[in-house]
Length: 65
Image (cartoon, rainbow, N blue to C red; front, side, top):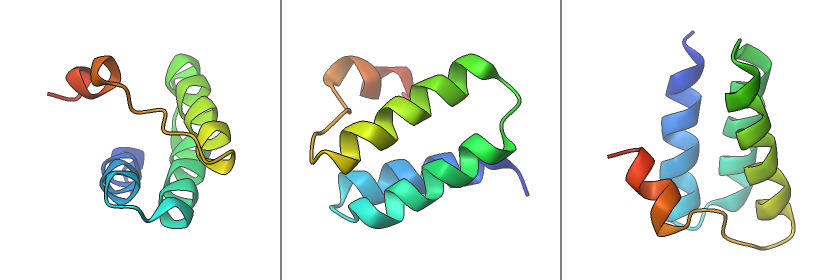
């Protein structure tokens, strides 16, 4: 399965308040991704979410548009 499916669902989950589901999806993305920069970014998101912080600034969200 394509890791970007997990990435997209993880973002949707995070934005709708399902933090645990988002973390789970981003962790799966990290396992499947080959790009180290993308892995590092998602790991940062995971850590922020675990701390109760929102890593999805306007700038980050613009990257997805």
